[in-house]
Length: 313
Image 1 (cartoon, rainbow, N blue to C red):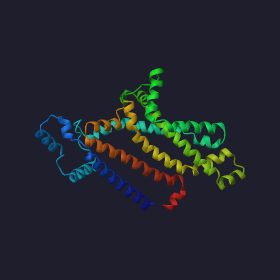
Image 2 (cartoon, one colour):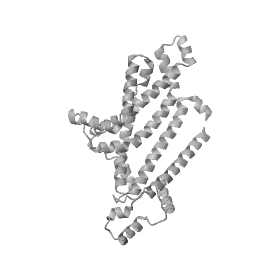
Image 3 (cartoon, helix red, strand yellow):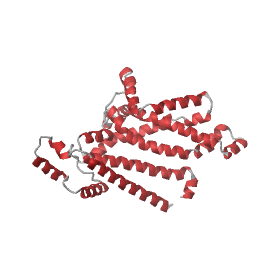
Image 4 (cartoon, rainbow, N blue to C red):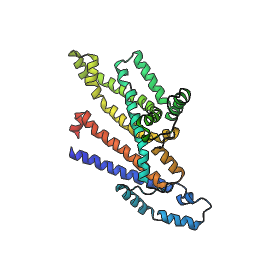
């Protein structure tokens, strides 16, 4: 078991290093000079060269990559060109919005997914209704759904705010109300996918011999479903749920701009417009690290859900 965990940890670190290298290379080849953007197009070349030296942009690319990577390993994400402050502080402030939004959307994804309900009523109107709604949810883009929710619940009904974030200091309830519509926008699409995957996985398990044996021994269909089928069907569901958690973290980039939320999505969007490459690189690598960490956690949960995975490890 210890060797398995060490291998997974080594894979995690290697993936993170490769991701950081790719992000650095992609950002380096983007057109535009951060020093020229900061000073303006009419700034003299001498001033631009002086600012490049001050920002460390005149150093060789391999040296800048190693310096940036070593700083991140020590918790130093560098200084933002546009904000003139530490990137770590900027990221920490924005994570206070992005992480609760992603977690709330994940909770709603699990709560709204009705795959077990559909599998238990296979061929009945409830099954057809869930599948029809899930197909509709998959077809709707989350940003368009967010705009539609704003029109209905903020403009027409005036139940929820249309955008913005009051901050956690204003109270947990106003902050959660501000995150509710964007969380629903993210969750409905993911819940539709999860419902279909759950239904397919549960139906496959219900055809297994051990389910028929349990029913033959007098166990009711509901008891066989919840005691035996659901846990054995949870491996593919857990895989999809891990991928969805990663998608929710990355999907906040678009939704935060739709709802004007001061999260990581808006931060990286503004940094790209301002050519603030330090912020772009740090935020993207942080999102990649979160995605890899979620996948690492899913691998560990496999052993909790299915003892056969533990034996194989």
